Image (cartoon, rainbow over all chains, first blue to last red; front, side, top):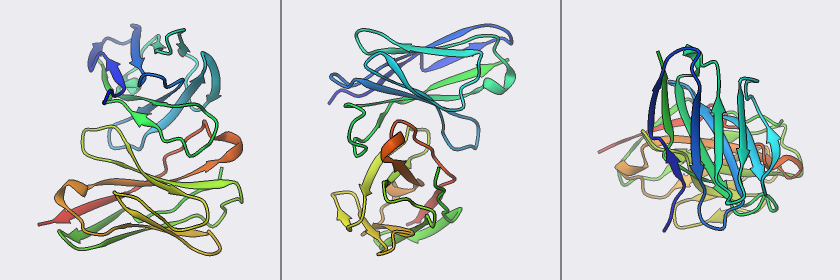
Amino acid sequence: AAGVIQSPRHLIKEKRETATLKCYPIPRHDTVYWYQQGPGQDPQFLISFYEKMQSDKGSIPDRFSAQQFSDYHSELNMSSLELGDSALYFCASSLGPQGIYNEQFFGPGTRLTVL
Amino acid sequence: DAKTTQPNSMESNEEEPVHLPCNHSTISGTDYIHWYRQLPSQGPEYVIHGLTSNVNNRMASLAIAEDRKSSTLILHRATLRDAAVYYCILRDEGNFNKFYFGSGTKLNVKP
């Protein structure tokens, strides 16, 4: 079965550079979530989208922005990168936001290293 | 948001049952109880969820206290592949798109 695809899997950037992470949800899934997991930490919810509209916002820095496109894929744009942004970034998708029983399917993550 | 409390770590022997507790004393009537786990170097994966009644699926069982202030995830026969961090998460019906991971329980399975 198709899973959530994230690209790139690994990314190395310098401080103050920008980065774009991409997420391709499971086919027919219309809701996408982004999480950040720092070293030794638990995943932190950043932001979610349903039908190309932002549905909820968590602890996403102002330097970050995200959007969901017409084909439901999503991109997380990160500017003015800081050392503290080094983390695993997970994307998850689900079929519809209605019915909170809808499980989220997580991708393998993008490991971002900021030097 | 209602909080959950889990032990930092637990240990089990292979082939034995494991009971992973979660306290959620401030749970509201509209909060669903979800369990996810994260295997090393992987993204989290869904395990099970419930509202009031006990639930069973192919992966685990979820026992929910009558007052819903606590729940227990039961792995009937732990395998080495079950070694992971297990997260107990409350999802509010009104804010289901927010999904907050607390500090889960790291389960170590000994052969």
